[in-house]
Image 1 (cartoon, rainbow, N blue to C red):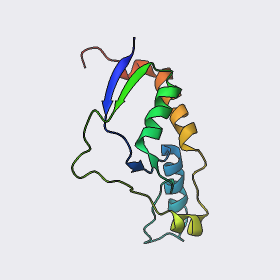
Image 2 (image 1 turned 90 degrees about the vertical axis):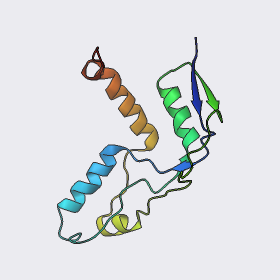
Image 3 (image 1 turned 180 degrees about the horizontal axis):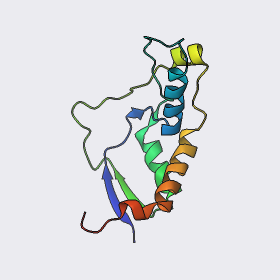
Image 4 (image 1 turned 180 degrees about the vertical axis):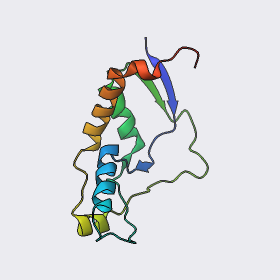
Length: 124
């Protein structure tokens, strides 16, 4: 039996980055005086359609889902291509995301599967 999931067409672009990469960037910036009083953007610097991430999650979870793209309308003020400019953090700290979004999603799903008892609480 398939679960039906209603979504927008999911063509809007997103710049997602695995949280471990973000933490690495923060720690690198905190450990040096080179970044004092500096604003640094941390992200992947790449965008993909939201549909790409949806399909990746379905695949990694081995889900049997029937996704109805276009069943919902886009939000009125949705951002279409918010891309993080990571040029400065790459130049100043030689930082770049070490874990791909594909591997990060897999690691996140594996963590949730291994720690199901923490968030599967009856009565919620």
